Length: 89
Image 1: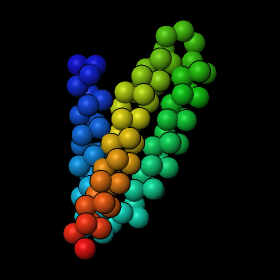
Image 2 (image 1 turned 135 degrees about the horizontal axis):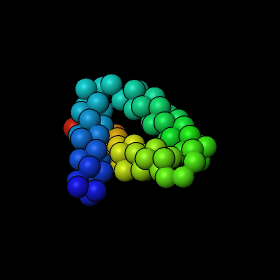
Image 3 (image 1 turned 90 degrees about the horizontal axis):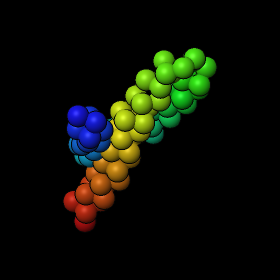
Image 4 (image 1 turned 90 degrees about the vertical axis):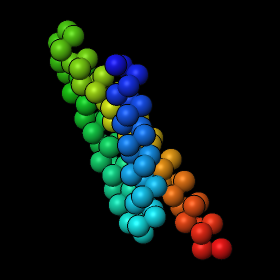
């Protein structure tokens, strides 16, 4: 299960990135990446403020859900951009 959730987040956002670039809505990808970066920063900083093992849930969420999603979105955006450029040629 610990491998399935990050893989699922990665693949779904990879597909989303490809389709956003294909539908000419690629300008939203940097906005989503900034939102993800802020979310990771918030989760890690909030987890450091908690006492004991309570805060580890936020760090786990940040690195097992948000980080693979951001990586998939970025790679999907690049793949979609390359495929769109090749289709125009």
